[in-house]
Length: 153
Image (cartoon, rainbow, N blue to C red; front, side, top):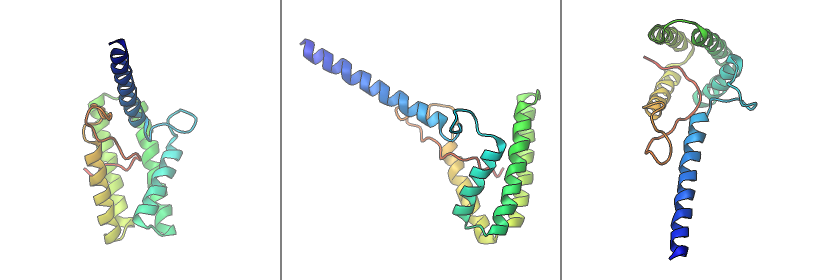
């Protein structure tokens, strides 16, 4: 009888460890740099530019233009996050920044690339769903793809 009880306790502990480690890994995904700190705006811009270049098959000129836009956006978002502005105002300002970014991106991408970009964003938007609301393996969430492509709305 003790043996069965110990096995069930051990199984419960293992399940708890697996569930919590999955949640912790997903929460930190794409958020921290190698040194354990949040990536700088430059690092964020470089990472997303690399992803965009690969996924959208950008040429060198497009990649340079997108890199500049990504760096500008990352710096502006960082400043916004560090400001004393009320949360709702920050959200509205961030939306304005993303809208401006998106109007500039459209001018750089070909129609085919823009279509891929829109599909990629929609896929990411669906995966982000309920950001911060139980995305661990045991809670039925879907996690996040990582990366920081701005929203299109």
